Image (cartoon, rainbow, N blue to C red; front, side, top):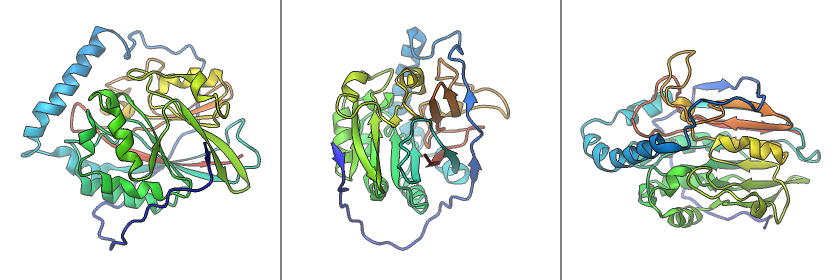
Length: 323
């Protein structure tokens, strides 16, 4: 599929009455060089502990917090105060040389549902689109547990598709919790956000073009590299919710991979390691390099399990990519 004409989605003009101002900004540190041998002794993606954690997460999110948050809604208080924009300027090896500068807005782990309110997400999205990205990448987990978590959030997310090169999505593990991932894809398509599930597209930008791919989730999905690369070959830019797909992508010489999933640990003490470790390969947040490939792991916007973050504030990432 070639992207020459973008979806024409029109939105009504509205007055600027935001309660969230994106003033917190930071520049990501240079990529950390990885050997490929970094491992945690406990693989967080497998085993009985992970099954138990997932079951507890589903139960608490569905049946406990909806009752508590009517009286106590801490994440609604925290998000507008702690949300920030991380920034990075990258020159990936293997990036098409004829390509002009590309500005990509990376969002991940929005986790619509009980912890968030649509009006706050709408304010954040509007503020992010003021930075005028060329393309919006959403790296999975747009819901907490099921497609109905998007109820009320669709108008808030719709402006993301106004980016000139569109808004693109790949599935995360939470998108499969409710068994209705197809409904998520349909709802996003209705507002111009297109899903890449083991698929790639050719995107024209200026006088150049690049291949954008999306791989299925590492834990709950079925990643298929052969299907994804059939039409256009190896992607130049890959959306992969789980960062532990990095080494598989690097083996295929993908120049740049965008991920989320880890929340940066969600709870971590200053200068300390993540309390909750979601990457077996120690790919917790920020930039990493291995071989000719770069990986960017975002902390994400939302929260799961606990309606709070500490030491790993919510964020989006604005990436400037140059040849």
